[in-house]
Length: 391
Image (cartoon, rainbow, N blue to C red; front, side, top):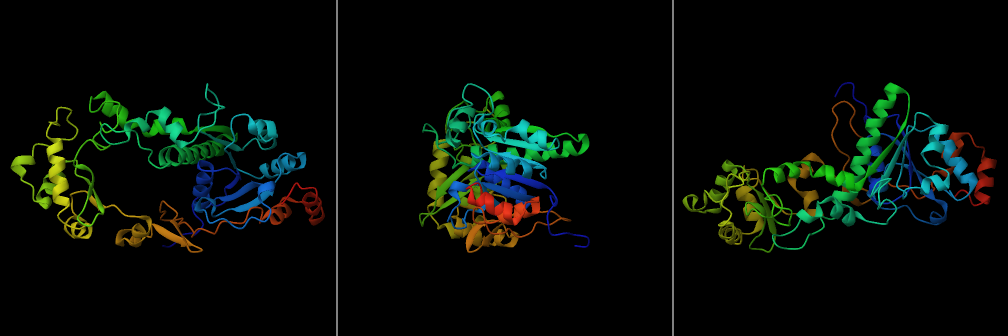
């Protein structure tokens, strides 16, 4: 396309990522994919002799290894902060302050800085200082209690809702929104992104459904969480699975037709999905009929019958299969970096297309080049390495 660039829309944005796990690196990956220049700060004690990782979450940025327990390490980080637009960290509340790299210390060095903080519970509240993981944060938000089979126990949906959807993506949106405001006001600010808050935000639609009386607070009660037989997964003749989401009346009617089920018998059982007065007593009968029909053919046979139609159908694929699927292949939704299958950068931009992701760097691999750019001499860098500040 005429007038395009290949660096992405965040070209020129400088980000300092203090190394962590999960949602922080996800935010760093997204910002790097979008064209930002991201520098990841690793702990020097964990960097010596460590090979380059294969983790896609760590792709696309340079790496420096500092010991932030030493004043010289803190001084180097604050010197780097002076050149940055955004800083992201995932310490428990108060840890960054105790290290000397908290928001006030960084904003004193760079008043335009966006200081992004990623935690599970948030910066304040009774649980703020407690340990936790994705499963705990989405449990407290109310999300986990809605996910699972009817009458069954809650089932964690990988760590997608807390760590990534409610955490890393929320932090990404927050720091970019703050950066946009800073370019108008000239003043930076702190972004407090908590996974509990993000998971609650992801429930917005379900608060509406609950207010309308569509479901109770329990697993399998919501028609999008396994309660409705026309929005579920089914096993096929070869032991594989397919997924259907035939919510609207015309899609449900087409599902019955493709399955060979009698419309006179089942046509009034499933629709309309959004009507709380829907007759649910016959859902077990409908589920059994749909399950029996799907068991009559293999998954690939059902693909030939239903894929691309308005049934709202898809095969349930593993990651390798998903990468080979014709639709994903045409969209180039997956990529490989150094032989590692992974997500391709997204979304797509018409004028500033995204570059192919770069391999993750060995922790501390760019320490010398980064510090030379910052103004340190080779002799100074050697002294810092000898003192154990730098790896």
